[in-house]
Image 1 (tube, rainbow over the protein chains, first blue to last red):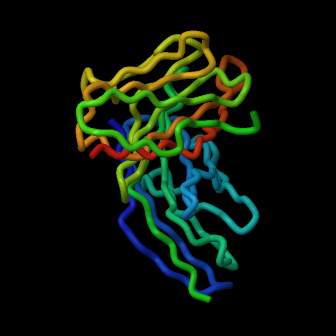
Image 2: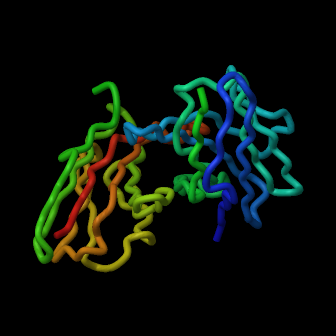
Image 3: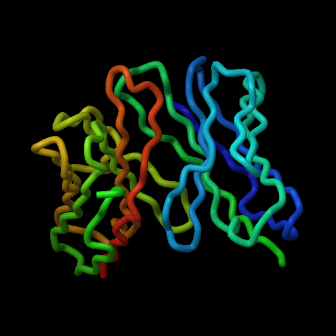
Length: 117
Length: 117
């Protein structure tokens, strides 16, 4: 079974600064997807960014980028130019790609990000 | 609709009662997932469907939990003889997955917050 670990329960960053959230995972599979989801106080679950394991290039979405280290099984999220609206719980998630139709997400325990004005 | 819709938004019930939680996925989405999220934790997989077929129910905690999706669209998660430990946020997600669609993200509803007294 796959596991996802987020070792930082809480992080804080000054507005306009850069912050990196850590995520490690354990799997015996070679082909999979990784995701970061954002859960603001409104309790929505919003997809921030995703990465296919077979791609060497790190994914980027505007101010959000990842550092994917497949050998180390590490998948960190970098938020540049932090904004007050980035304050939320961030979840890292894993999804297998080997079995068609078996696309359940395995989540970490989350990191609560606070933005300091 | 524009997004995944879940009802009710909040449900408070007494221990021992049965509850039914409803999920209306995005139109045309093949796959539908149920997750449970305890306070301060990441979502945990319960079960999922492709069309009307329940593909995996390995995450259902016990036989008091059941789910159906009889016409391949709306799904109902039922909890019988509720217990206090069932209190959590129950989230539904859907995705367009199907052969030929490749990597499709899961879109989450806002959840049903269930409280058992």
